[in-house]
Length: 420
Length: 105
Image 1 (spheres, each protein chain N blue to C red):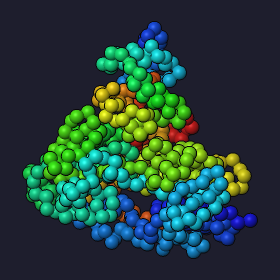
Image 2: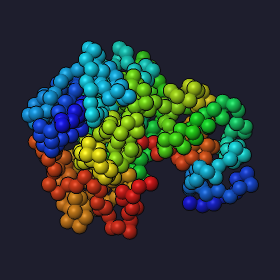
Image 3: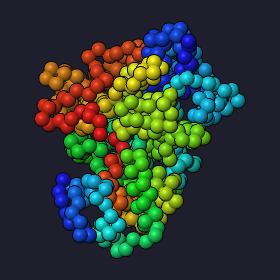
Image 4: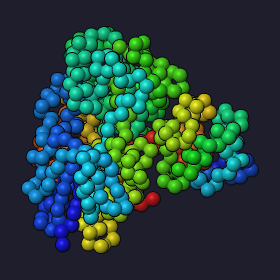
């Protein structure tokens, strides 16, 4: 009996799950991936484009070329999911029935949710680097920026890769120093969080780096609107931050078909899922991977990668009628570029905040955690070919486990992976 | 975790004053937390938000963000800031006796 597995989204999660399932089932399952376009962006590369450290064409490949043969890739716009009838409805009227559905459609940028952000100044004095077009446009604006107020604003959480706005600040500081104009630029990081990051130890370490680099922090700033002509950010509690060049990270939400599929998503369009099994709350035959879900960990490529094991395992068990034992512990692993050819690395999980230590082996490393090093930077650069050639095809990265392993001594660690 | 006396009951709170156990909450406790945080009395509009926060948390295990509150609580964001100055999501969570919203990671 051939099982019909339909995967919505052909990005990191959709691609690696499709390839793993195809390898596992061969002809025993029909695997269909649906995406609205054929452009796969290596999203970690977007950070480097505004600084001329990556070219846009270097970080883009066709989606269809990333699949094993046997995976059916289709281009189509999803209108809605009919959960009661196990059917995906496409905008052109085509109906795609499934036995198992995987939601891997990620998060979308919603700059229109913030009053004043989209207008004549968008792409001129107001930018984002969270899209290919935005990152390319910002390169020109950064290159021509000689003096004034450069403001990096996270409009609202959650966002993809929550360390990327900090990395942008660090790289901007570095580029401005190289160009000899750093003293003429006031660089400010504006965040709705109460510090540089969400967890105490990493937050204080990152705050120290911001101070060293003379980057101001405006915290607990919930952006209510942007006055484009006066070039000011206004918070809901009536504070103001003036800028000459704004780099905004727009609010994120789920794609619009989620809202048209009753019961599937929350108010922001993220799909409610069990944080450990990644099974959707709406139906037992729907699983969620990556940025699309509401599970309380970072929206990051590493999370998607680590979730892959759990999703594939649990789909197999679901189809076999067994109890789900695939268990995701919230493991996330992020390289934070700090400029000057250095990076720091953080490694954490639901019940374990990022702490100093070494990765992937607690004593041997070789990569230091929560400390800047050139080796971390080289590892970040080395990841791009691994992404296309190891991660997307659905292979394991040698030495890197999808489960969190405490880097610090156990006494300093909260229990990892225990269900709450 | 420490223990404090609120409206005649002993409750467990975190270092910032958020209740550790939502089941220890009561309406008089909410009134007292509100007063300590600069809200002299809770109006019907305050209660609408507090109850919404609490219900959402108890049903889903996580508290809504300000943006979701603005979309789903029936109270627009501007008014949320008038009702709960500084941080509506945090303050309404504290008054509603649920843990501090973690933001997102």
